[in-house]
Image (cartoon, rainbow, N blue to C red; front, top):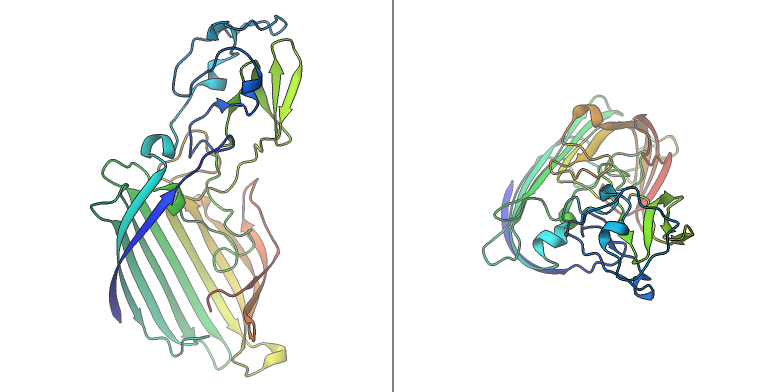
Length: 336
């Protein structure tokens, strides 16, 4: 077993634009072409009175008060500030990491017996611009059942959180789940919370909602405008990771006795959760065993001259609408 400590420093600068998701920057934001239109400018974070019965057929007049421009408070109110709004956009971070590892595996590549466990704690230290910590565990157990069959059980857990004046794990430190090495049968890094697409406005138009991933606007004289802002929620990750696998290591028919090929039948289960979800987020939940995703399938890994090649055929058992599934998956490189 081993115990290690390391000290690191990173400098992170976040640049936000018109399409920054709400978890990163508050909405609404000015429409890209707002400078082309005369009139008032609405500022995020400021409350405006709204007349919900406005007639869109009236012609917009420069200088009109906000009460006669917006359609509803729900469309334009800033519900929650984003991470950048609360914490800034440039962070110099000093981290201290302590890790413990114990292993009785019979070999480093394609083991067939033994146990390995690792535990790591990463935390920022005084002098950092932002404070957070992450605690991670990874373990696996190999149990020979016969000369040709071995059972492998794997588990991975992770939890992170801000502390001091920070109430959430920085989004760029989030955990992700899905894909080979995680929960096979789902596209890589797609499980768990999704982002909330940016809401935007311009000086003479009012947003009425997304249509086929294109944001549509209705102007004051009733005309429709569209922008290319993608409104499809994307995987955003979370601060809680729960994953596990049960694998039955099988003989490979065309490579009997080879230590360069491994075939397994697998059952994967896991997901990513968040205990600080925003009200606008999709698929965002605190840990809930009923929300875990699972798959069964077959996988093969070949230690080629180019590096390990992994192939997986996975069928989801537990999934929900909106999950991005993938029956066949392939990767070059990665863990053994």
